[in-house]
Image (cartoon, rainbow, N blue to C red; front, side, top):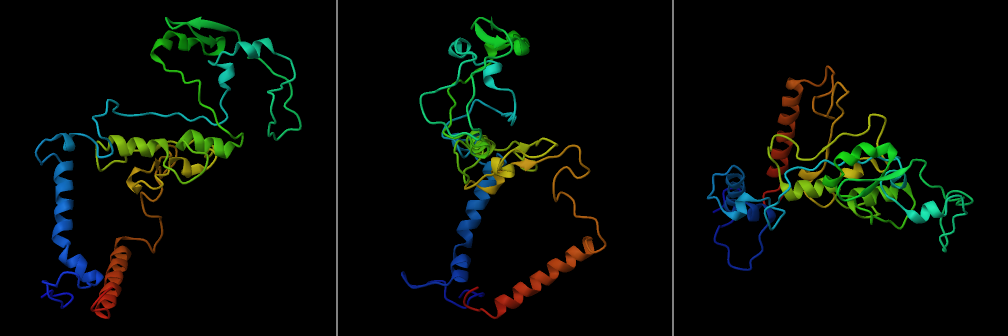
Length: 269
């Protein structure tokens, strides 16, 4: 007999169960799953391939950590490292890509080449402008991606595309996927940390580092190093009504309400 629901533990197959009895009967199984997860996380289980690699991957990753710098409003790639001979050729000419362009302005104006001179660097002969020529010392160790394109000129949608890979909201940010794939080195510290510009968020704000449909543990934790409270809600707000005693009283009152609720619903909750 289940001491909580008053129902026998040997219910006939197919007979309906209420929610509370189901949870009680399956508690051992759920507890075993949780125990196995904790043992595997702490390295107590046998060392198998499944316990040596993150849950989100089917192979052992080579990357250990990722740093992404997103600079909204930064210099154009055409002025830094994306050499376009055709742009130099058409400098000063009216810009006509041969199709209708959606613009905020009344006219696209004329093409304009980079104001800085180009030169080749490294064994890969990578073209760089003079303003970033210092990168030439390590250019052979950098991977440049030149085929990132989008279908919108709207800043917020383009920011979504850069942060999540999609032009609409509702998808995990890159950092959330990295957290999901690589896992955490320390469960007491956040895996994905965000350092926003102290002057304000980029377009879409925290949605850029949301975990969306991934577990919330993979969402970005925002840090503001220059503030007295660098992480929101890390410490309780200052006030005479918020103290350890009031927290204890609140939890006790909530537990009392829960017991009263359960007492009036003997078969389900």
